[in-house]
Image 1: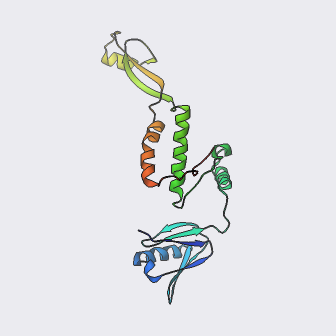
Image 2: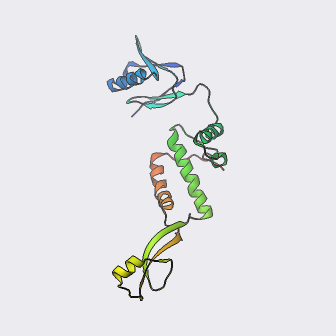
Image 3: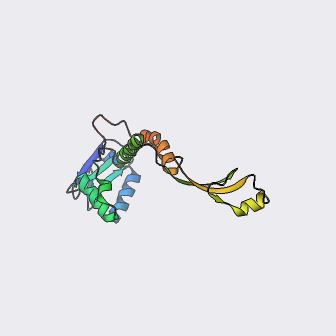
Length: 197
């Protein structure tokens, strides 16, 4: 389990104790150094880690390194830039997201929680679901091939294909199962935290 996080900014450096890095960590950091993401140098008192043009969280065996951007972008501006890059409408991303120290896992859990709350307010989504049934009356389209092959032309039971609007769709099933998984991954949400419309 990683110890306390080491915080540094983009293009900044931070010292590391000699026992904070394992041999596997040193290999991983040298691999990142070969890709010009960061620089790891051996010093008399331990290690010095310098971030290049890189931001993010690096979880090592004994330490977690958090590299913050040189110029922090507010959440709303970041979401609008992502919307522009992905070609999605900006109103769909006009939300206030709250992230905790764990990073994006809390962001995903917050989005999931907001969607579940919306479903509780507005009801489950409904979509058209394709069914093949045997019915006593014609409802939908007659499946002539199944009728001829299975009923041999009898008309007391009809093989039909229907498209009915139902709540038992993939989206609702996922949203029904995921809150428990998200609760395991993220800690409890403190009061006042979360996301708003």
